[in-house]
Figure 1 (cartoon, rainbow, N blue to C red):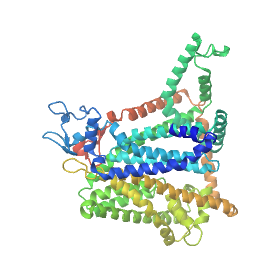
Figure 2 (figure 1 turned 45 degrees about the vertical axis):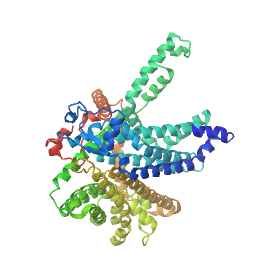
Figure 3 (figure 1 turned 180 degrees about the vertical axis):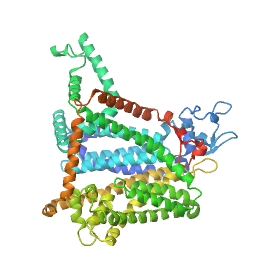
Figure 4 (figure 1 turned 60 degrees about the vertical axis):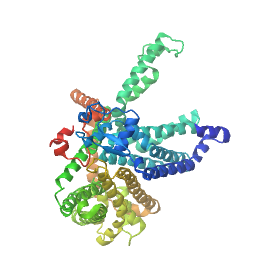
Amino acid sequence: IMLTLVKLFSFPNQPTKVYVAWLSGPLFFISVLTGLGWVLWTYLGKENEWGDVNRVSDSEQVGCEPDFNAYPECKNSDGKLCVVVENGVATFPDGCSESCVNIYDSCLNTFIVWVGPLLVCALYFFLSFFCTFLRQDTPEAEVVNFGKLWVFLLFAMWCTASLIGAGDGVTSAMAAFTLTSFVGSFVFLAASFSRDQQKDKIEEVWGKLVEKYGSYLDVAKGLIVVTCSPVFLVYIVMSFMNQMVRKIGCPCTKNLQADDLGAWVTRRTRKQINGFRTWDHGKVFTYAIYWGMAFMAMQVLVSQFTLLFLSWLIEQMQDFSVWVVTGIMVMVGLTMFLLPPVPGVPIYLTLGIVVIASGREQLGIVGAILYCNVVSLAMKLFACTLQQKAIGENLSRYVSIRQMCQMNSHLIRSMRLILSEQGLSVSKVAILVGGPDWPTSVLCGIMRLGLFQILLGTIPVIFLIIPTVLTGSFTYMASMRLDDGTLEFPWAGTLATMMTAITGLVQFGSMIVAAFYLEKVAEERADELEQIPIDEEVRRAEEKDLQKRQACNEVRQWHVMPVWIRVVLLLSLILMIICCYMVQLFQEHCFLNYELTYTISEHLDGDWTNLI
């Protein structure tokens, strides 16, 4: 509202789109000030940190109801919470468990208020870049890259929050923040164009999407189905009621045309339903189920069972020396590195959690973190050696290996030009650090490149390893408690979130730099790219795979499927939608509260299934 008033009174003759583009700098400046102010305020005093004591006292002040159903032992004789908070210190009378500080876990008001300035900082940051993209000279690729970075940061911060144990609060806060960001962005967008310009712009953007990403539209439609089906059903009911009111002839409604008299829903809804009928329902419903499976994997496997597995792993290794734990984790990490789809970030993150848990007594926390970074770098270099020598050089005669590297793709052909250069140029190091782990190392082996030079060019990956390991270490430290039940490192949760953001920036930045040099090679050395011979064996294998996919798509057509398969697919989709909504809306009733430092024997009565 304030920015709109400034526009009306100070720049009345300036086009709205130009004015909005001017806002990128001031909004970014406000974002930086807000973020720095919040970080400084957090560290000025212990009373400003988000810990158990502040959570209990703030929740009582705002009137949150304690969850005595989940913690019946925390009710005293007066029917109130047994924990006593005075002068920033929590005391537990006889019979009052230290776990009673978690009785306000379902109260999100205080957490959202505490983290509010950080969310406002991120919102201004988002809007500043959005304003930048309204300029005429902004490349379309930059808009796409920023969108990818934003999604990656939200996902990474959510994963970290889930491991810390603040998943519910952070998820709700992020949902509200993300919704606010997009609403604000659309308001800005609407204010930047007239109604006719908006319509033309939408048609232009949609045309570009269909042209560039037409093959992925069914994937997007599947996401819409699994997330918005209940909303669409409500929309149809409201459209039906609207149509009935129009048929009654109320004076405040539109007059119905002749072809609308026999319709049950409005003309717009009928148009949308007819558009839905043109979809490839078999493929869209299948993608919708895949989206649901991915959501359940994130909400259950990542948010719950990854936490459970890591706590079990820490418990099993607590009697081992840090050297034994290192050996076990290196073997597991190398195995994961040798799998094509697995990137290095989750491996470094896991090391940061497990090694500090077992090595803090022997090496101290700082020593354990430094040791973990060294081990992670050594494991990365050794994995690159195995991928290059054992797989790339020795197995390059197999078509399947070369096909997994996508030898004939434009990306790999550009990488071959850069990697074949003599010495260690910036572009070559960018590919070794920012390129996909498995294909890059295996490609180096197929090209018979020198191992020492490749390992030397891979060493800058330490700038990605350090924040990733710190993310895991701070995640574990955020769950550590003293004997009196208070958090030992109340600031660790905040640092874990900050390190997650830095990890995302470094990871995505290295990918952007690598993509820049690949694009540069494609433009400046197009003739050399064309001279690289096509791998005929790989080409024939890819053609066979394409024929198989086309045959599968033909038999998956909705009108070709037998009735019983359609029924099974629809039932699967309905059950998947129900499961997703249940886990999202009633998560506190689906899983027990569990933290990284808990043990299955003590907190789940020795049975891991009690988590559910």
